[in-house]
Length: 471
Image 1 (cartoon, helix red, strand yellow):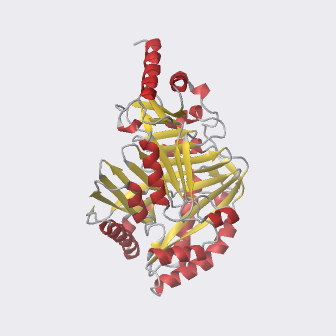
Image 2 (cartoon, helix red, strand yellow):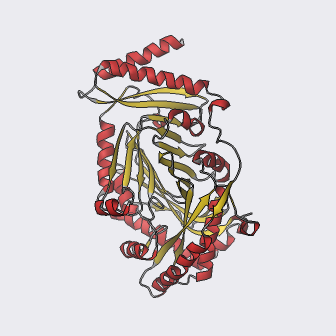
Image 3 (cartoon, one colour):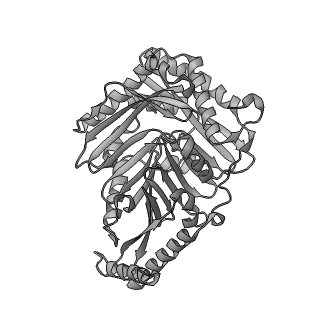
């Protein structure tokens, strides 16, 4: 098929889709198959300056890049998971998909980013906290799993001429991506550390020590079974970072994790490499990760498998996830003993939990599971209250669910840990440690220090001096 006839077929299909739509005005969605395209590296080509950018990089598994906004909804307050599910159902249900035969990786998707806490409209207005959830149907979606990539364009159309224009725009972008060479991609895809001006190390330690003492007192006196107390280190950089540069490098350093990016403008970005799956739901099959207990890769994980404290902490997470699923009427399956999961320089205890969940709404299940004891504590309500009291910063998206839901109801959400939040030349790193009965202050301080050091290392942040080197 010639390029001209291929273009003609796309325009004809777009016009036909418009004529067969269910409503006078709706979203038309067109897709094209491409070869040799990497969504991570080609994301800047589909993103207009200062527009929304999203990356979900599970390479060699599913990788999705998205840019621009076709439709969106920002929500605050309670019942945010139900509201996000309703928005996804309504929005995806109104789409006229001109390419329904496209594979699962190419389906239209809503991108989702939840904050850790629910926020009220009053707090949003007076304290500047983020919305409780962002929901975005992107204008551009570029996905790949295996050999082929699919480029999808979503657009609101009100007349047949606009449908034809949408098809022309898709064809032009596809040619841009196919013809792109290394000189067309951003210069920022390069190696090289970013020097630090100020790391704020002493500040976070001063705040953390008294909070840590109070948290250990709460678990040792059985007021809580577990509390995951986080710290935030704010680093001032000499220059701003390009998140895609960092995420590309993490493909080899954090191969077992899912790299992610949520960026709503040029100066703010939330990104990381999460090892923890809150849930995935594909054709009714549910998977969730219980991930708790941490050691360095140099220890080969042997101390985790023999650590009473880490095994008890891990089992609390497993039991809680299973109990939440059972309460939803689901019968989950777990392995008898935890496995070791290596993610970069850290090793964790990991128990995969699976179940058949036909007929369940994925965001309803996410509502039941978030937050797991791996990032909050037990009992959940009391632990969340203490986190608001003891942590002197807003978590924002840290440890909140981030991911996507597609037009067939499949969904995947990761827990946004091992992450950074960039605000201009300020990079906030957040890490937490799980406190249970018998936790020791110095050991927990060492754990969060290690996690912050690993974060700075994986983001290639150059220390101020050799004494702070993270070799």
